[in-house]
Each structure stands twice: as C-alpha cells, then as structure tokens.
Image (tube, rainbow, N blue to C red; front, side):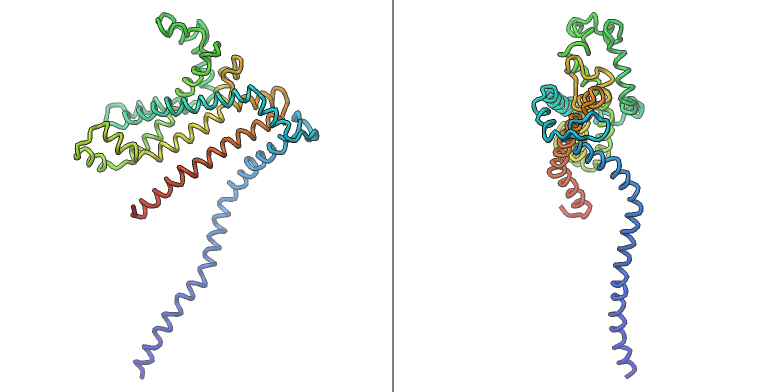
Length: 329
C-alpha cells in the first residue's frame, strides 16, 4: 500500500509543476515588455519630436501659401503640388537625381567593389590603403566642397594646371563648374571621391564574411579567379550589394551639402537637386508652403523606394539569414 501511494503521488506532483511555470510566464513577458519600453523610450521620444512631427508639419504647411512667419492661413489646397508638377526646375531636379543614381550604380559602386576586392588580398600596406581610401568619407561634405572648390578654380586651381597642357582633357580647364555641360559630371566625380570609400568598407566587410572553404572548394573544382568571383563571390555578396545600392540611391535623392557648397545649384540649375530647390524656395524666397510640397515629394519618393526595397530585397535577405541560421536550406 505504501508503494502504491508513493507511485500515485508522483504523477500528481509532476503535473502541478508546469502549472506554476505557466502562471508565472505572463508576468515575465510583461516585465520584458516594460523593460524594452523603458530602454526604447528615449529613442521613441526623439523619433516622435524630430521625425514624425516635422513630417506632419511639412504635410500640413504644403497646403498653404505661407512665407514661414506666423500661422499659415492662406489655404491653397493642391495649388503647391500643381505648381510643382508644372515646374521645369523641379522636373529637371528629378532628371538630374536619376542621372546621379544611375551613375552611382554603374560607376561609383563598381569602383568601390573592385577596390575592395583588391584590398581584400594579402598585400603589403593594405591597411594604409584602406585608411587612405576611407579618409574622404570622414570629411564633412562642407570641407570636401570647399576643398574641390579651390582645386577646380579657373586658371589658378590645381586641376587646370594638371590638365591644361594635355591634348584631350585640356579643354576642360576652366570649365569644371562654370559650364552647364560639365558641371554635373564634375559634381558626380567629387561625389564619387567622397563616398566610394564608404561603400568600399561595406564590401570589404561582406568579402571577409565569405567562408574561405567555399572559395577553396571552387579552386579545387578548377574554377579560375574570374569564375570564382562571378559564380561564388558575387552571389554570396548579394545582400551587401543590395544594401549598398539602397544607401547610394537614398543619398543621391537627399544630396544637398556638397552641391550647395560647390555650385549652389548652378550654373543655370545644371547641378540643382530637389534638396537645393527646397532650400532655395524655403529660405531664400520665403515660399515655405511650396518648399514643404517639395519636401513631401522627396519623402514620398524615398518612402516608395524604401518599401520596394523592403518588399523585394530586404525580406528575401532576412529570410535567407534565418534559414541559414536554422540549418535548413
């Protein structure tokens, strides 16, 4: 009888233990949510006051003819947006932004990738080369703009002295930022000098994350350097390439400081971007309602591109990362 009672008590005791843990689980989750909210509260407040409220104010003031002083009272409806659609300068801003985006993807990013591949090899002084190529990104846009404004001065600048006697590029002397046909390519060259080191470091991080065993296995199978790069390195570098393209596109859409310091959008609006046009109308001509409409257009373009990137690129990359971490292919 004693043995039977002891045998009957064990299942009852074992059945009660999970119930105690189940009653404590909601309290633990609640404490976890409270702790997360407490730590996130400063960032959420900053995001609310410095991101969400300015976005709402920009949307609101874009429906008014407002000079920036006092309360906006002259309601214009969609007048600012109709003006925006018919403005040749703004349409030119869209075209120039598209040109900068395409040039960045076709020229700037491949240069950064090629440099990263070279500096990922074992070579003497590669740390120095990495630091030298990354150094321009550390400089602010204002410093870079002033520096190249001095270098590209007509006649007295370093660039004119270097190319003045050359047969093909000698005609560029004195026309870097003064000729509408050369101003935008020159601006893109300065932009590439400023930002390609940043993308180079992103690619270096991606290259160093590729397992060496995979490349070694491809070599054993007879793949040459170009075949290994095309069939192994590039596919594994896909998520890094996509995030680099995303940052490059968003940066080209929001480009302001470098343009304002070097050319202020000239000559004849040939280097003007949406951000420069917004600044011109908002703080030079005191047409804050129209400037707000431009800012809303920039916001919508960036948001649409970000949503498309998240839908077609980021989600796939995250799913691949989770699948690889889970050990399932």
